[in-house]
Every structure is written in C-alpha cells, then in structure tokens.
Amino acid sequence: MRVCVFGAGAIGGHLAARLATGGAEVSIVARGAHLAAIRHNGLRVHAPDTRMHVHPRATDDPATLGPQDAVLVTAKAPALPSVAAAIAPLLGPDTPVAFVMNGIPWWYFDRHGGALEGTRLPALDSGEAVRRAIGPARAVGGVVYSACTVVAPGVVEVGHNRNRLVLGEPDGTLSARIEAIAGPLRAGGLRVDVTDRVRDWVWSKLLLNLGSGPLAVLTGMAPQDIHTEPACTAAARAIYAEAAAIAEALGCTPHFDVETQLTHARAMTHKPSILQDLELGRPMEVESIFAAPLALARLAGVATPALDLLVAMAKLRARAAGLYAG
Image (cartoon, rainbow, N blue to C red; front, side):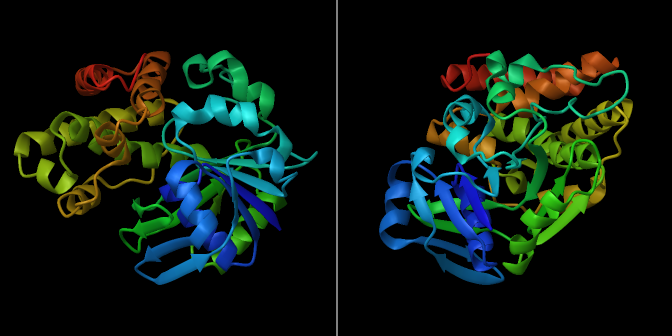
C-alpha cells in the first residue's frame, strides 16, 4: 500500500514510522532541515515501546511521488492552503485523504446529515481551497493522541505510551478504505480505532486542547506547572463544561472524564503544540482550536463565558507575536 504523509513533522513523522514499520510503502512531504536530515539519515522515532529507524521517500514536491493509495494530512491548520495547492499529484481516482489534525475540521458539516448538512465554516478553508482541491468525498476524519516533539532534524521523540489514532468516515460508515489505512499502522504497533461517530472524537480531543491551550499560551507553561494554581484548575473545569455543552448541543458525546484528565494534566510536562508554535514563531492554530468552537457555540446557542475571555486573551497574545491574523 502506497501512503504519503503530508506534513511529516512530529505527529506525521511518528505515523510515517509506524506505517513503514507495518509494511506500507511510505513517502513524506516535509521541508527544511527536517527534510534534509530524513533524506540523508532516514527518520528516527524514539517511543516508549520501540525505537524505529525507517527510510521513507522524502520530498518537498508532491509531484515527484505520483498517485497514492491513501494520503494522511498531518500538517497544522494554517498550512492547509499550501496543502491544497500541492496535493493534486498524490490523488488517484479513489485516493482517500485522512485529515489527522487538531481542532474543528473544515469538513465538519459535510456528510453530516440533518438540518446542518453542508454548513460551511469559511474561516477553516479560506476561499474553499481545500474543498476544491480534495473535496468532501475523499475526506476521512482523524484524531490522534500522541505527545510528540521533533528533538532534532530527522528525530522524533514520543513522550508517553498512550498513543492512539481514531479514524472515521464523516457519514458514519465503516469503510474498507479506513481499514486499509489502519492495517499497516496497527502492524507498526500503534493503537488504531475505527469509529462510526468521528465527531464525538473530534470533540474529545478538542476538550483536551481547549482545557490546556489557552492557559498554556497565556502562562507559557506546561500543564504540570499551570495546575499548581487552583484558579487555573477551576478555569480548566469551566472550559471543559462549556466545550462539552457545545458538543452535546450539536449531537455529540465526547469520550472525556474531567477528573481523569486533570490527574494527567497535573503530571504533564509536555507543552501543548500551540504553545510550542508560539515559542518557535510558527503560525498558531488559533482558528481551528480556539475560534471555531466558539463559532459553533453561537450556532448552537450555547453560552461560553470562560472560553470567550480566555480565547480572546490567547488571540491577543498570538496577534502580538505576529502568528495569527484573524
């Protein structure tokens, strides 16, 4: 099976190594020093359960790779316009594209059913570039739980052994194309679950991102340090309650236990990716992780006073750093 991982940074690198270890013919689209190192020395992934050293075909030009059996987009949301502009050579007539990304996805109301079927979220797909280039029929939902960091060019470190990928069709079908993607990932040692309710899992991960992201951006700290202040824990509880209310108003049931998550957070030294982006001067996923849930709250008629305040301050911080223009 030919699989391309488009945007093979930390998460993408981890998934690419699992795919290659599991027997897939893997290529990656990456850039800069990370790409150069992978071309020269291969991709190394150090995880608690294994160490992988693989040699995927690596490029910054998808046109050199040709059509794939599947594509995993693991780039961050601000990079979607560039993905849309470059992905066409990877797409055969039936190539599915799994969007393994944080936040509300651009396809959220496609193949959704009900009164909101086809509702557009313009801020998540500027000019509908992704919709035109890829289209909702190809889209597969992906939610990943894996604390990964590029610790050196070509080297990814996985912070814990609770690694998991959830894949789902937006229309809830249990398709052969998802099982085909899941197969080599499972063979490579990754837990992969296939669901008929992928939006439940989008919200499950989003609760984690919302409960840690704004506070991390504002404090510059990892969750372990944030939760030394009881007021921050109280703020996280309020965020979790508001985000769960949005999800439930939209017909979703997040898989989320507040007390379990707070216990994990109090021991978590890994900085949320959106704080890593701030510190490294990279475009921040403010729109998909922070702003889009609030837009959906307004659509669903759910009050979100804690999120409104914390997201507004996080937006100001991101704008001041020149990493968010919304």
